[in-house]
Amino acid sequence: MTNFPKVTRQIVLKSRPTGIPQAENFDFAEAKIPGLAEGQILVRNEYLSVDPAMRGWVSVVANYSNPVGIGEVMRSFASGKVVASKHKDYAEGESVTGLFGWQEYAVVDSGAITRKVTETDLPLSLSLGVLGLNGITAYFGLLDNSQPRPGDTVVVSTVAGAVGSAVGQIAKLMGCRTIGIAGGPTKTKLCLDEFGYEVAIDYKAGHSIGEQLAAACPDGVDVYFDNTSGPISDAVMARLSVGARVVICGTASVASWDPPPLGPRVERHILVKRARVSGFLVLDYQHRYMEAVHVSPNGSATESSVTAKRFPTASNIARELSPSFTGEKISGRS
Image (cartoon, rainbow, N blue to C red):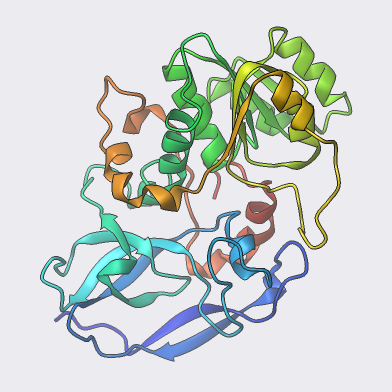
């Protein structure tokens, strides 16, 4: 067994956020690293993820998982090296990714491990980006849930983020016309120059989103990949084409659902356009993750075809919090 420190540094939930989580809702702590029981491994985390979904994990209102408790290590996906093992399937020195939390060292059972990272010719950080939950979310959320066809007009919100940037590139590979919605000239330029979108709509430019959508999508929206909810989605819903498919992947624009925000009723649009709306959680696809990771070059996406988001380490994680939770984080920026 490799020598390793007896104490690990952790980031724990200090207080329950009201609205968008801030750095003051978290605290640094130290804890003794326990001995391994049979079937457990010790992972030294090298990359920690900061994702919008974490807003729901720290909310007082449970969503699809129980809230993180006060004083508990912040739940997160991470990637690192196995430094000790009492599990027959995992050896010291192997790279793994999984639900390891915001901490330097994590003692975990095999159930916390998403997969071994065997792509030795690629940065380990990609296992938290296009070869991790972000890329897998884009892959199954788009291909399984919206089933894009060549020639479809695909609109994506928070298009400069880790998921949105990948969705557009996969749609492009499928022969679709891609329209991205982002905030500010830096992000819209990134969408056009790096992510290959045909049109980038700046919702912060002061122009009507509806008018910009009408100009960009004269024949309507065939597929809408929704990462935001709120006014942006309200505007897109009014532009749906007949038979449109809407995938709800996130609600980044809504700071709190207690009480639920009020907005336009979309049922009439869905009815008249015979549209299909579906919610999407990537955790439902755990049994198929490797299908997305190992997709062949003649499939829908390759490792080299999508720009990845890098993730911070524990030392600078506090400054990453608010932009990631609000959708302001830019893909590829750490």
